[in-house]
Length: 315
Ligand SMILES: Nc1ncnc2c1ncn2[C@@H]1O[C@H](COP(=O)(O)OP(=O)(O)OP(=O)(O)O)[C@@H](O)[C@H]1O
Ligand SMILES: [Mg+2]
Image (tube, rainbow, N blue to C red):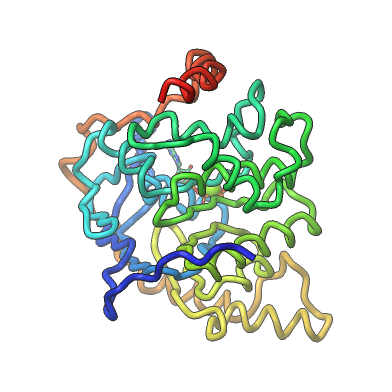
């Protein structure tokens, strides 16, 4: 059983995430791609939210902004009461390190480093972090990998690699865990194990947002937000989500398939199309230089990790 996190003291908590009129427009040659086209979402402490939508609907773009890996073209993003949308990439990296645990579909582990050192990596960037090795060991044990700490990623199964990535995301005790298709590269049995781990973390008070294409994965979340063409087309508790309920009914009757489009989905999509405003010409944002994502870990970073034993002794 995982240790319980402190619940917020206030009876009316502020949202962990509040985004308003969020837009992200990519310029590719002469073309402008409206990846996010006016998104409003609030997510409260200890919510477990699934984000769904067809390929290209803007899920990863949204997650990258929520994870402070990228900035919006316009709109607001308030994280724990702190406005992030006008911050530079340096400040965003600091916020990301302190507040956010990010999990990717492709794990993004350092291949030359052990599970333990991969999990210690975020602490390397956190000047206030004491006892990094102890913290990393605790995070690995939380995800059930106490016996694999010295294994490198290629010595681990896909599910174990994702557990290392989850431990790395948790090691700084983030206020929110963001996962972009965390089970996309896993088989169905391993998917269930990873989702059960998310559910355990949620039970201990962790706020979680997970992107998925799979209704059965989304079914474990409490709330489902659906995107289409960069806009939110529905936002319901899972138990009240018409598309999800339709899918559950079909599966129960043995009539469904994972890929099938339900009648409820067709209706919601048609309504979203009907409500869609004519595109207006956005001004003022395209000349702005887009921030570059944080650079990947360099060999220098890996060397720093390799020297960590000495660094830790010197603390
Ligand atoms: N860096 C970029 N430059 C230009 N266009 C981009 C960029 N990133 C994303 N896009 C475009 O923005 C739109 C949304 O992309 P995004 O990756 O957010 O979709 P997604 O919902 O995550 O899709 P998938 O389910 O396939 O992962 C797409 O049309 C995509 O081509
Ligand atoms: Mg994506």
